[in-house]
Image (cartoon, rainbow, N blue to C red; front, top):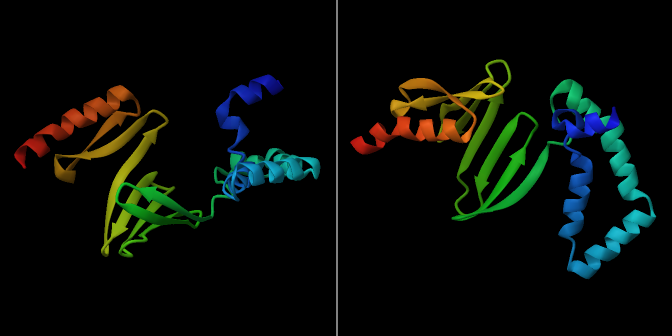
Length: 169
């Protein structure tokens, strides 16, 4: 039964606390400092306690509620055109350019299963989940919406559906 649970990714959770601790350790210093901290946290059972907390508490909450209790936080990411501060409040994301301070808000509406964005005071829907293997996306400049598979074939079909709009430009 344990092997079956571990083989099903939807049941095991994201191990967010353990991954955060390991991520922090990887960015503390050079590889020697990181190794010393890793060894120290292994000897003082910090990693073991985090893993136990993930397995018994956080992953169970994530499984039963559908939301990750550790999802909140800030992170700086490197983009092709600069750095961005990404703030997560558990309901969506604020993406702020570290270069010019422009802000984009990404929100998920659980009731309609849609992701939308807000920029410059204007809000628009990006896409809508139909089921586990289909997504509804805008075509014809956003005027019409069509359902596509969440697969490589679906991505190719979506690209082909967008071709007339790009050809008109």
